[in-house]
Image (cartoon, rainbow, N blue to C red; front, side, top):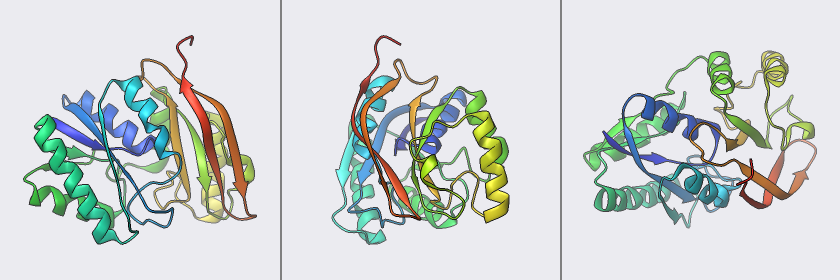
Length: 229
């Protein structure tokens, strides 16, 4: 089936493409919506502009739009218009997304797909968090944490590339502080720097950290594809 992917550049949407391709689907395009602010309940915010490098490295074209409101209804209208564009340009038959446990998101996407006569594909749905995170690392997904907003996650995690030892520490922190190990609740956002889908990894040349004592963001200021890797 020919699919579009709702794409944020994070581990979930990127791994959803990986699984969809392994299932025999053709991911024909990426759909990225720039939210008005980080207060969005539906859309991913940090470092979204650098998804253009991921699109180039995966050789999958990207369609983008912006939402001028944090209201979910307005964001869904922007998403519907983008999906219609994908149908017109790429003749997609469905939408793949990286939802894991958010029934709110899943129902919104399914309703939208039903309206546009598309199939909703959620390959990560209800995967067990620790197995999923291990599968990511075992599949050579190289990703960093780009925001934190939970007890137990401090400034040291901003910009950190996650390894197997880190995963054990995160698992213990998850048990202690009660956040989702896969960050499904927005406790952290991630950005994929390299994976089997990429022809070239992403090299970060400049970045800044913003930390207020409880939550923080790692912002990529300058990046490029590393053709020498």
